[in-house]
Amino acid sequence: MSAPEEDLDGRSGGRRQSRARRVDAAVMWREGFSEEPHSGVKRRRDLRGTGAKVRVDKLPDTVGALREGLVVSVSRRTAEVEFLDEPDLGAVVDVAYSPRLELGKESLVAVGDRVDVHGLPGSGWLLTKVHERRTRLSRPGPDARDHLDIVVAANIEVLVIVVSADKPRFHPRFVDRFLVTAQLGGVRTVLFLNKCDLLPPEERPDLSTYERLGVQVVRGSASAGTGIEELRQVVSGKWSAFAGNSGVGKSTLIASLCPGQQIATGEVRSKDGRGRHTTTRAKVYPLPDGGRIVDTPGIRELALHRLTPSEVGLYFTEFEPLFGTCRFNDCMHTHEPGCAVRSAVAAGTIHPDRYASYVRILETLNR
Ligand code: GDP
Ligand code: ZN
Image 1 (spheres, rainbow, N blue to C red):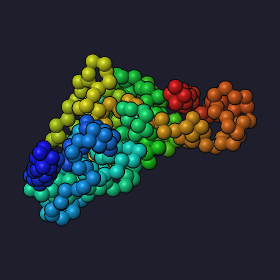
Image 2: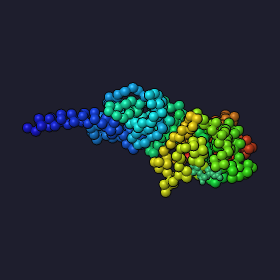
Image 3: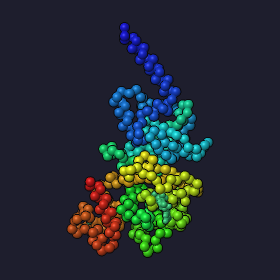
Image 4: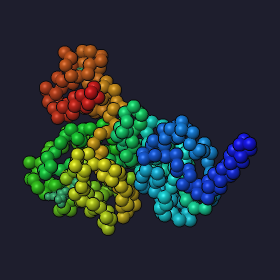
């Protein structure tokens, strides 16, 4: 007697569900996604385990034509996408992530991604495809076991590393780590030495080592307005990212390049100094002459964990002429006798700060 009842319940339940899905497809299809945009797949696996009635293997019907866009911001369940095509080129819409997006070794969606978007029945937009990333700036994901990198910014042409002549003091370690990350991700690097108004040229940090390595160095002052034109030429018409330690004047610099934009200077960080959510999320600012600046606050850890210790030396350009000249083929240039790199440091042809950065990166990989 109870069997037919159950049957009936089951059927009507099924009908209710499909109606619900039609009514608010966008909400329904977002169900499978949790906090982090790249963790969608894991979450879906969890849902399957619990037998939750969320059909994530079937896409909702899409309406309207395929649209092309650029991701300008990424949050937990949605991204903001700017349309790259008519009729409303430049318009920005919220999009949900299609459950069919396949998670690889990095974030599902990142700022700077070129994407395909489809309209959903009723209203709303669904991100259905992320085009292959040409470049990326990455950091390790929250869970090392996931082997996922968080892409802080994708398809960046230039990374501007902002350092300051004084207040705070110049840290070569920071620059060297970013140089390696940028090379790993295929991004060209430019150094901007800010706050040059504070010190006469002879007292400023000597960045000629970097210039000899082929890194463009621009010297100036965001508050005095010097060097800004030269930097504008570097970033004009391009997608660039800016990185710098807190207090170096990065926000002031971005504000002078992107007049009229709301840019928070002197950013507040959480008590433990790590900076969360809002402070670690990349923001995009349009340049008046085309191009975008991606502000990348709080990248502390970089995706150097992708390197094996023996690869690190490949990212130190000045080691290149010495390849194969150490006594041991597998020389790590740390303690081995007959090491050509250490001889070059002793002879002054490799800068001791650069060598110290190399050793530091090796140490972080061996931890
Ligand atoms: P951010 O943390 O790197 O974004 O740094 P901010 O842009 O918030 O600047 C930090 C402080 O440095 C502020 O008090 C700025 O006014 C100051 N500042 C920025 N650029 C310059 C500069 O070129 N010269 C001097 N003397 N101060 C600057
Ligand atoms: Zn060696």
